Image (cartoon, rainbow, N blue to C red; front, side):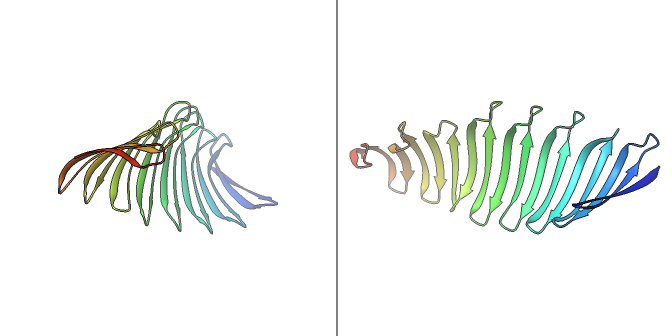
Length: 177
């Protein structure tokens, strides 16, 4: 093993090299903060960075594609997971108001989310025209029209079940009971 120090306009980087002269590990510093990298056969596999905005860890597969990113900022922690094509397929985050899990298909299209916000558990379907909620007042299902307006609400509270149908302006047109 040997070491190599290079200095760029962004800052110094110290590389630890394997017997073939390929990077094994690196430690760098720049105006944005320090970074630490780990390599396999000269390919970057893991990177840890620290900036004034937060800390991040990126993990790559054997093909060098980023597969997992973990980050923490002053507002939230987050975990993103990517497929072999580099598309985000799932993300998990938390804030002071709640937490959420988002799921995406192979084209990057949003498919579903599950989260707790403002004390309510919510499951949203990817087409975003249906939502299941669990609140302290009881469970409910909300159906939206193609413009995203609530049109049907089915819920159960302390008074029992209720079905509410709404017009395009959100005014009740039928309620059972």
